[in-house]
Every structure is written in structure tokens, then in C-alpha cells.
Length: 449
Image (cartoon, rainbow, N blue to C red):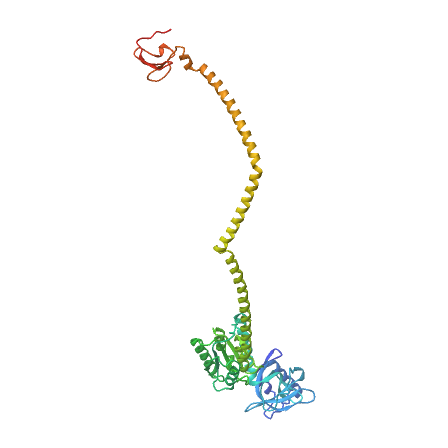
């Protein structure tokens, strides 16, 4: 039995029933309360004793009065509760709710006092299955975003022209037909590898992860398209799996996510390197248009041809210029040019010599005569000075003294001139130079002055 907190004291449901007899009527005892007081107490017990909560059930008895409020019942297989959704609490359109819809209603339990009706005052309402999935989606999205799995820094660039394209999807779905049709139209020469996997149901996430691991292991594709056609949130739920999100993040091969329609978003869209609005859009993204590519190639080819022709013309001009330089600098041309220069120099030299001879001959004759006369005069003066010097030198020469009968005595062993008799001793050999010849003698005795 429920227990509630009522005005600071605990009050059990049995306490309320204790004031009533078996017939359901209040005992006529002191302290009996009125119906209004009872309903007010019950309302207070309900509102204070139960927290706000989510209630799932099917809508029935739906009423939309002119006030804008919504009144309906929520029921399951064995019970129902009245509910009121007031206009001021409503956010967004509510016209979509109808009889028989399974919904989740969030609010507080209360009591409508005038009639004693137990009811749920709704503050928020959403489709039952989709609402729970949306909450799971938002929780996982916030978690992975906080870990950085959605950051642009981790996104890989798609190849400009892939050599091979891989597709992870159901081989029997409409998505693969759309993808192949677009690829065949845009660039039919690029091969496509299909990695089959279920894209809906409980087993789908594991099959998609296995297909991705196979594509990574085989390493035969430059880019992967992962996706399926449109559907409800439950249909697309396989692409909101956390393990699949982490597998996409770790893939070394760029992945294009193409799940559902343009308005559909899944966790795979946020983790993938590129998000396409539809499977057909993914095929448009991964390959260029063949005609655009051919036009670009033709434009580049023409440009290369123009550049090549221009380069050939420039090189031809350079070759002509170098040929002229080579011809001008060849040994034969150089010899011819030098021979012509030598002949010119010879002619100029011969002409200069002839002109110089005519101009220098009289001057040379005069200079020769002057030089000859000056030479004879200088030789005569030099001869006269030489004679005088010779006579002066002879007059003071020792040899002239010898002519007068003197002799020069030298030691025979040292050649030193003997000036003093004490410089020799008896028995010493001496040499005496005379005016004519020399005498070799031995000293018999000496006598000092």
C-alpha cells in the first residue's frame, strides 16, 4: 500500500479509509470531513507523493475544444487514466496526434476536485517508440561528440577519381540500385564492389561492422559508400549503433554515409568522412561526371598541346640563334676572321713603316752624325784622363820604387812583407821582389837597427 508525505507527517491510504465504514459512507463521528476536503487532501497527496514521470499508453477519447487544450485518456490492455494537455504547455504542432496513437506522456499526477477524477497533467508528449529512440540518439550523439569522433580534423579527403568503389548495404534494397544507376551514368568504367549486410533489425549493426572489416582487410577500394534507403527512425536505427560509429571512425578507407533521406540524420552521418543526403547523392559525390571529366581532359590536352607548340617554337628560335653563334664561333670561321684581321694589320703596319721611314730618315742621319761626333769627343777625353791617371798611379806605385834599385822582402812561408829585421830569424826563407824578377834566399843572420 502506498504511503504519502502529507503536511510533515506520514499518512497511509489505510488512514484515509479508517474514517469510512463498510458501506463507503463517512462515520458520523466527530472530526468528519466534507467531500471537497477529501478531494483536496487526495489531490495534495497525489501531487506531493508522486514525482513527475513518463507514462506510456494509447490515446483514446481525444477531445480538442476551442480553448486549445487537449483532453484524452491513456490506456493499455487492462486500465486507463484521464489526461489533460493544456495549451500553454504545448510546444510545436499537436495536430498529428490521433485516436489509437501509442505515445509517451510526461507530467504529474493530480485530481480534478469538482468530479474527483484522477488524471495526468501532461507537460510533454511524443510518439512512444520514436521518443525513446530519440533520447538514446541524443545521449549517444553527445557522448561521441565529447570524445571528438565528429571533429573535422579527423575527416579524410575523398579521392578525386577512385580506382574502385565499395558499397556496404543490402544487395536487395533500392539503395544499391540507385547507387549503381548513378555510377553507371556518371563514370561507368569505375568498378564497384558490394559488401552485403543487413541494414535493418537487431543483427544489422554487427553485419555492417563485419562488412566494413572485410572491406578494410581486402583493401581493394579507395572509398566506401555505407547506407540504405529511407524509413522510420526504427528502420534506420542500425546506423545509430555505438560500435558501428567507432568502426567507421577507425576506418583507414574514407567513408561516405548515405542513410535515408535528406532530413534523416544518424550517428553514422556524423562520424563518416562525408555525409550524403541520399544513396544517389553519395554516388554523385564519390565520382565526377564522365562528360565533365572528359571536357576537363580535353581542355587540358589542348592546353598542353598549345604549351608544347609554343615551347617548340621557342626552342626552334633558340636553336637558330645557337646555330648562328656556333657558326660564328667555329674554328674555320675564327681562322678566316683572324686571317682577315692579320692581313689588315700587315697592311696597316707596312703603311706605317713606309710613312715612318720617309719621316725618320733625315732625323736618323742627323742623329747618327751627332752621336758619332759626340762619341769621338767623349772617347778622346776619357783617353786623356786615363793617361793622366796612369802616370799618377805609376808615380806612387811600389813598382816605380823598385825601378830605383829597391826591393820588397816577404817571408817565403806567409808572404808577409818584412818591415823589421826582428820579423825574421836566421834560417828563415825569404823572397825579395826586384824591378826585374825575384830572389829566394835564406837568412844567415839578422841585425836590428
